Length: 165
Image 1 (cartoon, rainbow, N blue to C red):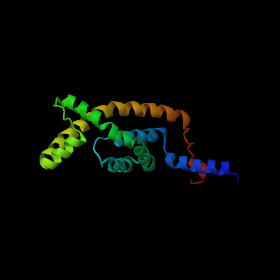
Image 2 (image 1 turned 135 degrees about the vertical axis):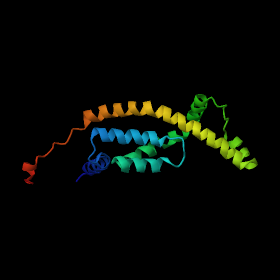
Image 3 (image 1 turned 30 degrees about the horizontal axis):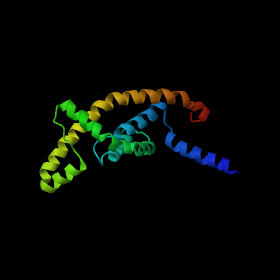
Image 4 (image 1 turned 30 degrees about the vertical axis):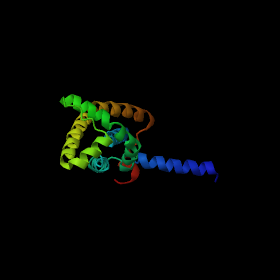
């Protein structure tokens, strides 16, 4: 066997792992939910939420974890925009969170710093919910249309053909 044949074989096995028996609907839902949960502005909860939703709705866990790892840098990049949008939605005075201000706040009064962080996190989380609902519907619809074009449904085998009658 040549290297290209082996490479294509391994690549196909890798792709099959992520497509494992999923319909275009399930693939779209897996990718969309993992991408949205992966950018939730609460650190440390995305993997647990992804695992729970994959098991609850029988989605592809391997695909969802891979997508969440891909969007993980956006979780940090989008925290401040989520925070600012949430502050605007709640009409809350700007928190002015910076690393230096948080270090100073934690060194002087830990409880007050945690309270400030709690309010900031709630603002960011609420704005994530507001943004994720329409973004999720749009992303799901686009992915579903794309996968519907490229993934052909598997033919249903009748019981008589299998010999189960």
